[in-house]
Image (cartoon, rainbow, N blue to C red; front, side):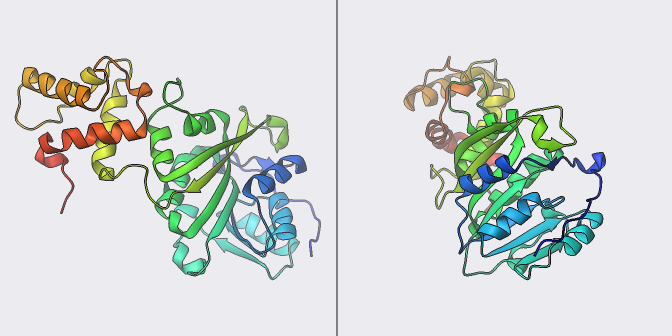
Length: 285
């Protein structure tokens, strides 16, 4: 049961832009394929327009909300035993405490843009709890997450998210879908967590190489990796020669730039560099 009443105003300090467009709500639910048996986690429910639709379509909803004003409002508005309100910072939530161990949940959320990346990182770190994530984020962030090698948007964020999940870019959403309207366009993005990463390379080593490659993205891959001084006890001349051989051996061209290299290619590159890495860069045993 939903009891309608005026909701609290948006707080700029919390990055609140309340979704008001029911068409966008329907798009998010369709993209997540929310069904009658699903348990759905909502992050930042605000005034509850998405919460209401999720309760109409799912078996149960767990809503994570930091703002105590919103918790009070949602408690007064929704008298549905299938809704669980968790008054906590989503970055501090222990999912094992609030979600069942025998069933994966879906996440459908309009994320605060100022902490989008930390929330996505946290969700992917705990991806075993989730089968699907549909997130409203800033358009440019969504495009970077979904970017493919060879595009200008492709970077560390693209690799980091696609390493953990399959990515589908959803519709672009205009500022008028929110109150107050943000200064940017938004987009829905769908993440399907991977059971296994796309490469077998140790994650720490892979991302050491990826971050080094993109640190100076205008440089060639050879010069970017050389500038990071990753190899053990060799002069710059020896490192250049070693790196050039490794890059060529993986089928890459030393003159390529970081944004042209796929995750499997980064995996092969990291594997080739692994025997020669400085000790401090090796995984701790």
